[in-house]
Length: 370
Image 1 (cartoon, rainbow, N blue to C red):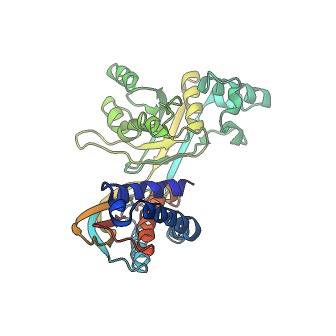
Image 2: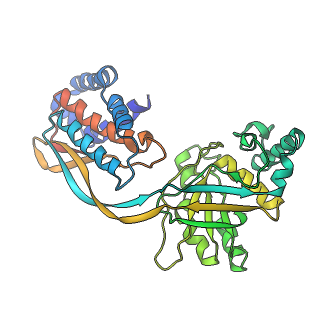
């Protein structure tokens, strides 16, 4: 159903952009017949899902500038040419290149957590306190979230954390006490009086659950991921952890892009799973000796030549006027790149394919790009 809705949006853009376009070519009755044919072809003989599976399972993650991304571009070019569109070509571009590296260690040390793990009663009591702080309005906060503490099998000097470097982060090795912050105002207030110097900062602002449009909620907190290192470094912070930008409380860290500015010191920055962010927030308040240790060997490399892949159906009246649609073909390295944005690319390809299969002759050139 989601695939169908996405395809419908593409067709609205392509076919409905010019007033009465279909009515001029087919008449209203023929319009209805043609739209029904689009639905039937998509639902009964669609190619997008199979092509997405092929992309994800044979190519996989396509980190910008990586060898896998280049293999993906070769695959896409060959795949599009097999449909005999009017034109399939590549457009050379330079793309940024960042590598995660082989070392990505996140650990914490806490005497409060040690005491919590000594027996089952203390463990459960501690979990309830953490859950209640994270979900103060819940009738039973214990069940709101995947539980990190239950994954710990024994008391140790250090406890590993589910976290991952953000795309573009520098590497580094840091161990320091932690301060948890929930707003930029709080960050600046403490930074100006020297409280962030020599610390690892957890930026813990969550997505706003009251927003029905979850993308607006995402937009309301993603700036701490993008700008976190730039915000914290001027105050002497050593590294930054960011609460994963997700409205699900679980043990899966979400990577994403971050950035630096040339005139501001660069410090490592990473995303931590939402469930673990709640634990860190609690321990940073309850344990004065609570520390985190971060070790990363990710690095930025020189830009690399890559390409956009372009497929076109030429317009029969205004070929020089072009309607462009598509998606970004690169993806993060923590998955297969299906949702972000392999699916968007395959929706765009499928729109072009469906119109070709049904013999639609556009007035304007239709250009699919990824």
